[in-house]
Structure formats: structure tokens, C-alpha cells
Length: 266
Ligand SMILES: [Fe+2]
Image (cartoon, rainbow, N blue to C red; front, side):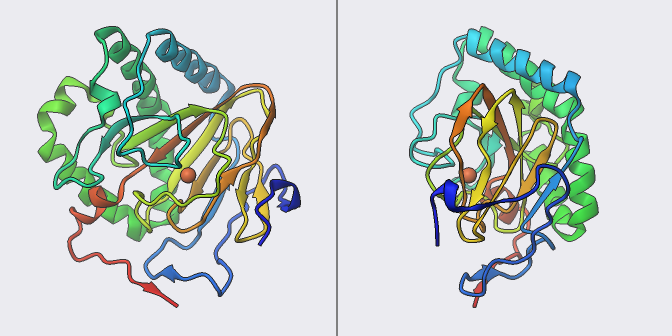
């Protein structure tokens, strides 16, 4: 199984690339959406990309601080900010430390970024989620109701954290994650939606299990079961790449859907 990005087959730059199956040697649970991965073209307009970039720059300029990451959701060298709501190892959802332990100036900038994602991106994500995975969308709606109930006061104070149930948290970073990993805090059955902003080269989404790498270009959105498909990024060879991963942690889904179990089968 090659893990060097140079040895993987590059898929076309445009088109849906709907991938259904992993090799038989890899065990996956039942109850997943019909595709492991789908990429959508022309999803985020040039104007939206520019406004997202500006708001991210405002977050950086605000002095927003990383928190020491015992609950870091992704790979070990991850320097992403994790904004929004998750449950991780708790019994109820809560605001991530990087969402709340910030200066008022940083919170203003973070809220402006998240509000933009909520107003202009989340609705489109909800629409493709519901269309392509209606069964899993029901799980998300139950999770949304529970979060709205438990965090009613927080959402009233910070409506920017309400993404309409399409996802509950957003990880933002520059560059890519070069280590092959699985996002263990994600739910098996719930897609993470990834998009990037900038003018970069490289940074393809690599899946060594499938022997392929998939370009994610400006304007595209990439839906992936990040707890099922092991992945990494190819190096960004030039330019700037700001990556947004809109995701939902496992317990936020499972605690709202107590009957749900993802039994791994051969
Ligand atoms: Fe990941």
C-alpha cells in the first residue's frame, strides 16, 4: 500500500468522483452513506472564497490563540483551530476551548468567520447532505435538536455557532496534514465537508488504501467519511491553502441517537 503521494494515481481535477468501496481487506461498519467520498464542483463562489480568506486573515490578526490540545481532533502535528460545538469525551455538547477562551477581539473575528460559513456555505452543505444521505441526515437532525436544547443560551449569545445541523464544528488551518490518519473523534456515518481557499498547488487528498489522490481545487467541496477512509494531504508545493473542515464529532451524533451502533463487520 503506497503512502508516498507521488506513487498514488491522481484523479481528474473536476467531476464528482463518487467513491463507494474500500478494498475487501479493510473492515467498514454497516449503516454508512452510499459513498465514502464525493466531490462537488462549483460549490463556493469566487466572492465567497475571497470573503472567507479575509475573515480568516482577520482571525489571525485578532491574535486568536490555540489551546493546548488534549482534545485535538486530528493528527498529532495538527495546528488547526477547532471552532464550534463538540462533545468528544463528555456527556453533553459544549463550545470548544478555542471558541470561547479568546479575547473579545478574537471572538468578534471568529464569529464573523463562522457566521459567513453559516450564512453562505452551511445551507448548501445541508442540501447535498440530505440529498445524498437522507438516512444519516435524520441522525443529524436529532443531534441538532439536542444541541439546540442543551446549548440554547449559548446559541442565543453566539448565533454564529448554529450551522443548521449540517455540522457542528469547523477546523481551520493552513497547509495540509502530511501524516496518514483516521479522524477518530468523527462519526463513522457522518461526512466531514472539506474545502480550501487560496491559490495553491498540490495539497491533494491522498487515500493510500485506495491508491489514489484527489485534487481539491478552489470552489469545490469534498465530502468524506474521515473516520473510515485513512487519509493525508500531499505537500502544498506553492501558494497559500486555507483548509476548512466542517465536521461533527461522534458523541454529538450517538448521544442523540441512542439506538445507533456502528458495528464493524468483515
Ligand atoms: Fe483528517
